[in-house]
Length: 327
Image (cartoon, rainbow, N blue to C red; front, side, top):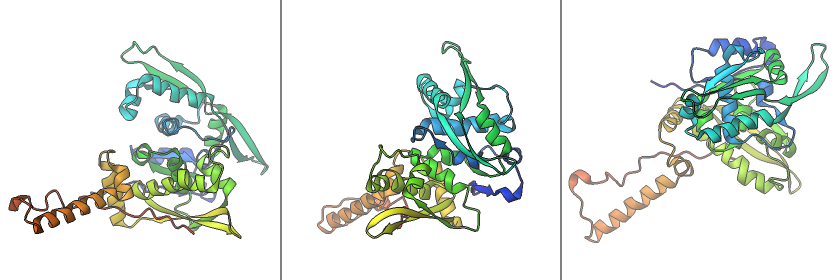
């Protein structure tokens, strides 16, 4: 039976709050409800969270549930985090402290209709129990800035926990959340400047200074991973002024049922070999082995039993193009 969470998003006009959405999706363990303002948040230093910290942020939001906007202390055992991340406690602590020390900036609109920017850390308070305790846990509180954003939000998307945890690039996760907020709207594309694209991906100008760097190191891998693992497709087209690239047109759409099934299968497979399957290497190697076997057989060198013919030579993986449109 197919079970894949396709991101659902609701614009402001629906008046269904993010807290309502969290309550609605609570029975689904694969659903992470992200407030649109958080998915679109900008980082004061110009760079996004590390992949590990970004995934942890999503999981802590899910763990907090409908109390995510309340001024309460949440707690989660190290064992639960380790079961998810398979990382040492030191590495988990580093991710927690990254959330505690990272200052974000969120664009908001007051009840009087005045636009303003609210800044603050993601986690305002963190308590860690000694590693020597078998049931050691981390206790945390979301900052007032985060709680205010979530409490007032009527713009949200329910994304797949499994897809979030499967992404191997922080740029992929950022783009996944960005498109997840928009995929169910009538709009199927948007034009963004290179500066806006950097904000979406969380790419600092000093990190990847040239368009070619952003394309090769961040945008192309993000689009490829989304098309392999997400419940929707993504593509882009560079926008030029003369010969100079000044932005991109991002496009998205829902996957057909067969493509959803393939994405589900990929999430069910081991992570090992995922990059090769995404890039088409597995199929290429299998095809080459098949041609080699036929060549050897034609030369009288192939020796296989009838019941083993093609067992190892037939491609077992079906790969898909990444959907990127380039100029």
